[in-house]
Length: 251
Ligand code: AMP
Image (tube, rainbow, N blue to C red; front, side):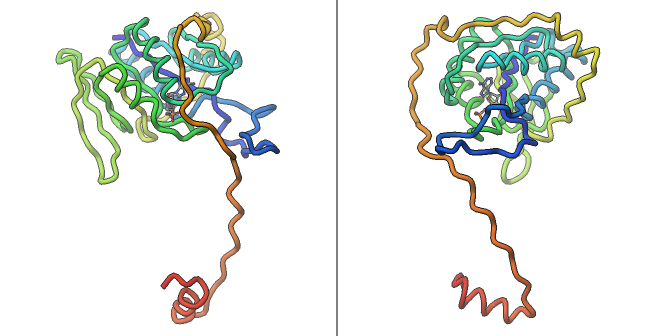
């Protein structure tokens, strides 16, 4: 069984975000970048299934600038067998990422695609769903458990939904998206970092895909949320009710 894991290069989750002075976007110059945390979880799941001899090959794929090679080297150190960078400096919206991934799926013919449930930079939570839609494949989003039943050509997933947990059986090939509780990614060991250097990393140019990618939305302005004002302590419930009525005017 072959598995494709799309991984996105994003600002590291520990970094305090700075907005560009003209409000056109977020500052990424001299900022630590890392693999999107949900993609680390997606990759860890694939690696665990490979260790259990369920998956034979894991291919990590990233769409982004030249520097996304670092993210792919990290994916190789985490256990991917090979990596593909589709190089572009354009900032692409999820539908366009999904269209590019569809071409990758047609070329690589995986049985399963495991994505993160969302990228922490745009918080879109759309790419996996759109990819499954474009391919006409089964989809399981926000999964917290994955079991593969190769004899039946099916997978069983547990999804984290508002009302609790939903268990689904999906026919392969399928697209799933990883939620936080699917697993805990392991630390990358130094020998694995060294080994990753000799694993194959192929670079493709986006222009060679021959896709016409339209842009459907445009960032108008990015602003920081204003800092929260400090709270106050009140002496009694009655004073609280008076304040909610007279000052906040919400009751
Ligand atoms: P999003 O829909 O933007 O929140 O992203 C959801 C998931 O799609 C991410 O967790 C990744 O697995 C995948 N993805 C999004 N953008 C890219 C990209 N540029 N390269 C590779 N994978 C991506």
